[in-house]
Image (cartoon, rainbow over all chains, first blue to last red; front, top):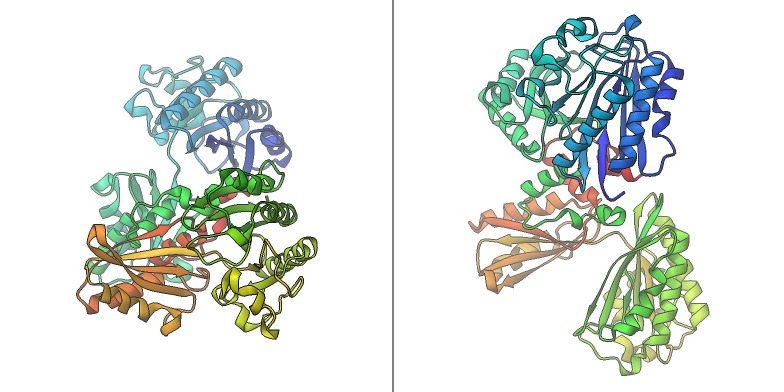
Length: 298
Length: 298
């Protein structure tokens, strides 16, 4: 695969393995598409799929999976802890290799338009694909959830980007968009004082004056007797992992608290780590093509 | 490719592109084998090929390339600046993915044995494949070069591991072995004083009491007006890049000289950089499988 986009669709079914199999089936054994992972959560009653592919075959496969989910899931009887508004709740596309964000946005629009037309489904564009500032944030789009959507989408500012201004009876509403890869990154502090983690989180996150592509909050790790600054890096190409780490180190010093470790949860693009190594080693003129593995697989 | 070995054969022909094409031909368009690079050097009169593959197809391709080189090259008329002892001068095999060093040694022995038998060629095993301590180091094996080999291999301690105890008239002698990937890593100092780079090189390298898998020497970068500690990391999995970097930083401090940068020359395995990022970020429990690209290509 020369050009790679990742897609992480979330479906509102986490309890019935047979239904989930039908939903992921379109991602299997297909030229130009690779299913990396899918995880179901019974409490959330939700399934998160991770798939990569070349743009065109990926698009076709995603639309087929959406169809399977719309056939299998009836939101009128859906219960689960996670906020949700549709059978296909959200479909983010992420540029991985040889693809610009603008192309990924265009792909997301094509999928949104095709799904709206095929399934008579109201679809919102969000994040980089959003058509208005108040629609960028998924939490804002989803507010009200499935049950509140019939009222919500009658308001002019919440008219869907594609499809009817009426909720699909069984499938609800879907959000489709393009975004950068998320890196879930946590930094552990040698203290049990949650207030310290919260204070540091406030200082480093974008919301309260910190780094542009950094969301953060303090949490307790009760079993280890420590606290953690729990971080979502929303664009590691612009806000570097080591910036977050070093700022936390500087702030922890104010409290006389040591940084005792950090962790990456789930997947991380190779570039985020190479960037970090290059900073600390003061590497001059390093190119990703110098990584042996990237040459083998190019 | 699930199991990958790299091979970096050196052939004693750097001037005739037609001959070089014949030599690399067996690495092209072959299932399970990928030619990454080949570079010829006219002064050295030598060509270095970088190829990866699954063990069996790689073995077949390497033996075919050796045959092409033995047909194309006559060492009796070979001149070049680089030390050399045969048409196929040296054939190192390097474990890259899903292959143990012991299997790579076994593969090198099979290639050595087959080539010796097929081409009536004396072959020495070196590095990890060596059958005696004094044969590990390639420079020791090659000492005397092509012209001195007829005398050398008559000595009992230099009896070839495979093939006749007589030099091949036109193809000389070949060394085959398994080794870890080399990382060529240089650290630049903010001074023009070569003695400082040499002093630091002496302190960090294995030869004079430093790190086990580190070779180093000081060199001048005249155009930049600085000096450099030029390093070969012979096993980055055991001697970490950041150990070398931090030791140089500590030693440079003694002279009041800043480390102004570093560089990686050529290819580097992804693991060497991930290891470095994981150290500086104090990453807990990080696994290579968390790198998105490694999942995509696995």
